[in-house]
Image 1: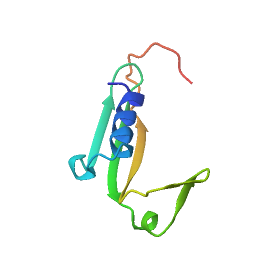
Image 2: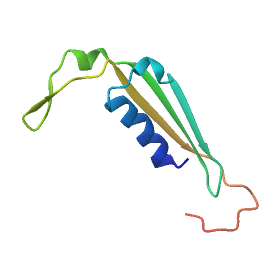
Image 3: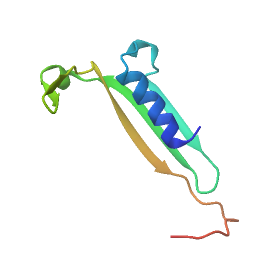
Length: 86
């Protein structure tokens, strides 16, 4: 599963009104091919969103009870890596 696909799956499930309790509280996505990265997503209660009214243009939005926070970290290049370096 690609980085983009993994995040889209989590977000669309949340946006489409699925029961957030069925979603995991923590997701770890690790990609070790080529340069590699680790993406950690954590679901937390979002009390601030419950006190505010948000709009998409003139259309009111309903805030979720939860929010997602993502942490991204690259993994170290192996010593044998012969590709392009930044």
